[in-house]
Length: 221
Ligand code: Z5A
Image (cartoon, rainbow, N blue to C red):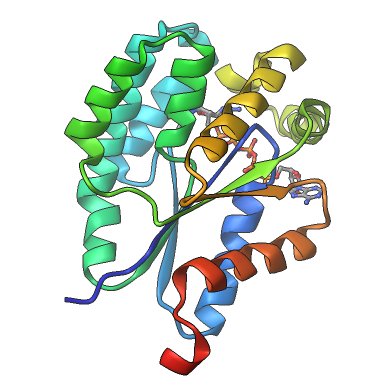
């Protein structure tokens, strides 16, 4: 049976994940590779509703455990309804955040015991691990500056910052360290790219990683 590839983008706020997910999809589609772009939290109708709840500044803060349970409720539905059917159908899936975000936000920074994280992974993700994870690395101040620009645009549009965007520079520095640790622990799956380069340069580097890690050598295609 045909099986697509599963690629995730991870990193701190404003590191450029959404931008690169879209650019990668454009490149894959131009090569005739059928793919979808999705995101977490969210990606399916139920998971998008859970996202609204999680990111609602009016209901923050939650404990790391209650957050993790909601992220995995959303992830279970996203996997069942969107990710696995696409992969089984031979489509590639590009996902803006996945389990590594739980590992960093709720475990490394939030203090959720790693055993609880592992148990949830086993129950929910099972064997649907990403084939490739691109970690976009930017200094906390760069991510915050990009996010501030976006927040200003949101404020002009009358929207409020979400629950996560109100955290400080130290928090974002801890996130950065957390993602770098994940990548260091799993080099066979993760690639760290410098997210401060221009978007088109990063996009070319992402594609090079896809070619090197996921596509067979030219002679064997
Ligand atoms: N979360 C969690 O706690 N646990 C979990 O398990 C999961 C998530 C899955 C989701 O928020 C929050 O949920 C997130 C973690 C938590 N909180 N935070 N922080 P989200 O999905 O709404 O937010 P985000 O993931 O952080 O996305 P973002 O802030 O939109 O950032 P991004 O997708 O990485 O960046 P972008 O949208 O592509 O770009 C941001 C801006 O920078 C934009 O103006 C771009 O034009 C600009 N940009 C992008 N790339 C560049 C480059 N290369 N140079 C210059 N400017 C650039």
